[in-house]
Length: 163
Ligand SMILES: CC(C)(COP(=O)(O)OP(=O)(O)OC[C@H]1O[C@@H](n2cnc3c(N)ncnc32)[C@H](O)[C@@H]1OP(=O)(O)O)[C@@H](O)C(=O)NCCC(=O)NCCS
Image 1: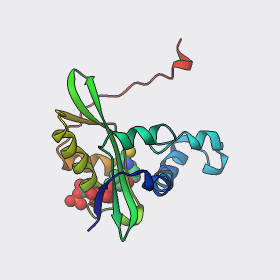
Image 2 (image 1 turned 90 degrees about the vertical axis):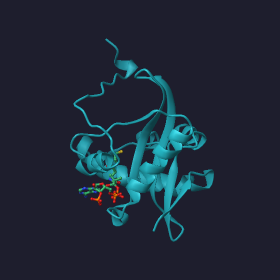
Image 3 (image 1 turned 45 degrees about the vertical axis):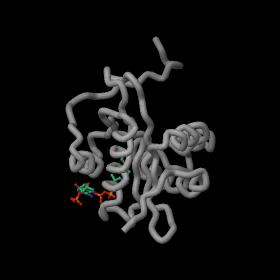
């Protein structure tokens, strides 16, 4: 059984390596480029463990890692957001991942449930998480916890591209 513990500064190196390892597979497919073709600057800015983002998810108190035999095998990065979608306090799930060789053992469920429960204790009324429609595993995980998946799509604008 994996141990779920609050994210600590000391976890930084290992959890960054795991987040990038997990991102590698779907980013290569999404960008249609090999990891080796990506610039170091681009890679450095990826993920919730990148400089700047990590500190926010550490301070949120809602981010957790899963450990087996002392090794980090999964993570969830979450924070509280206020007055989004007219909800006073809501947990935003930035990222969740489990090492492929530890998947389907209930770790993702334990991690997401913990972030939801602790968010509720801290006053949240709801939880929001963005899921790519082709990500069946993530969709099934969220459904198991009672998330409602509607046809909403997030639209995103990089403000350097404002027309
Ligand atoms: C999504 C992810 C976090 C799930 O973690 P996990 O530890 O394997 O999930 P769990 O074992 O806790 O599974 C919980 C439920 O999710 C669903 N699920 C998980 N993996 C599944 C799979 N391969 N096929 C079908 N359902 C799956 C099931 O409903 C499962 O419950 P069950 O085992 O009782 O049927 C993991 O697959 C992952 O890291 N994927 C890559 C990163 C990613 O896509 N992250 C989400 C977007 S940021």
